[in-house]
Length: 240
Ligand code: HEM
Ligand SMILES: *[C@@H]1O[C@H](CO)[C@@H](O)[C@H](O)[C@H]1NC(C)=O
Picture 1 (cartoon, rainbow, N blue to C red):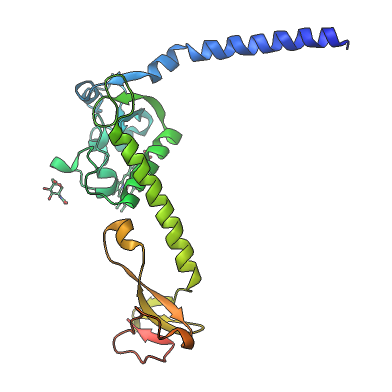
Picture 2: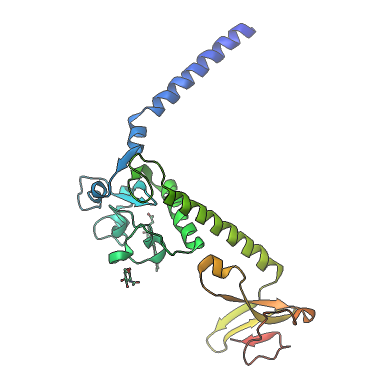
């Protein structure tokens, strides 16, 4: 093939591709994706009207969840998510009264991260149809400060979790088992079981939490190690 002929073919191919992309860009499907809902409009799509799709808002993104009618339709276990943005209930599990809110006030960074992951789930599993005006998007459909704050907090949560994982990997965890006749026990294949505070837990979840880790003899004077009550300090198995 001569070079001139090749570039002609290439030019036609590129033009065709551009036309196809433009058609996609201005298609009705895309315009529908750009739809901006008010909270009052969204209520109509709560699954009570069989003629309408079922829509759900999370962090101000609106999804068509009609194919999940058994969950989100009238009488479904997750019908409370339909026709509104109840972002907070994705971590609180509180589907009653004021629990059905889009406010994430007071949630920890990992809880916020988990809600962002739910939004990812909807992007993957359902059709995105638009944005909800309010806490997360302004009337032009632009993200609010609140949404940016939520996304930043989720990112911090992810970083903290990663750091916690790395920290905990340095000190091996105890084995543990629970059985009917023996009750609970923890043990170390090497070293001695100690209870330790998870260092990042308060930043992560706002709560204190401990785990069992195994320490060598030369580490037993480290600060913050707690011997299981009723357990010999040099036993490698403790009842819990
Ligand atoms: C914070 C609490 C909870 C929230 C926010 C939640 C949320 C959800 C949502 C939104 C779905 C639908 C996913 C989809 O569109 O496919 C779902 C499905 C499901 N949930 Fe939950 N859930 C919670 C707790 C639970 C608990 C405690 C159980 C079981 C004891 C449970 C069992 C299930 C099952 C079995 C499904 C799948 C049903 C199916 O595919 O037919 N969920 N959950
Ligand atoms: C759910 O949230 C409402 C309002 O914040 C509260 O009054 C109620 O006690 C909560 N219910 C549960 C089960 O946590």
